[in-house]
Length: 136
Image (tube, rainbow, N blue to C red; front, side, top):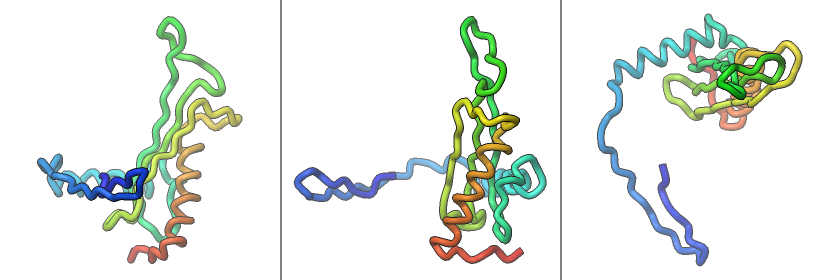
């Protein structure tokens, strides 16, 4: 993760990450990517889709536990998120969008709050880095 360290005096120390083991097989990775891409193309995560690009991602919504272990209720009583990456065949970025206690009226789920923000940032990144649309 870290390729170098710059000290306060300006000297650089290069690091060389060590790979210990492959965590999942490439087949498992392909299966998970297909599932996450389907969530964006066909599922609840459609609001993260950027036209012309295949995106893999997942929405998330969780209730917040309050005093006594009971879940809080009402507006602002949850956490919403969307995690995704693109383009799926050669990812240029990975992103997590998370809202703690979103208070916008009728926006209670990750698909309504975090996924659209992912879409806006992803569209910007595709343009900024000159990433061509996928061959679909």
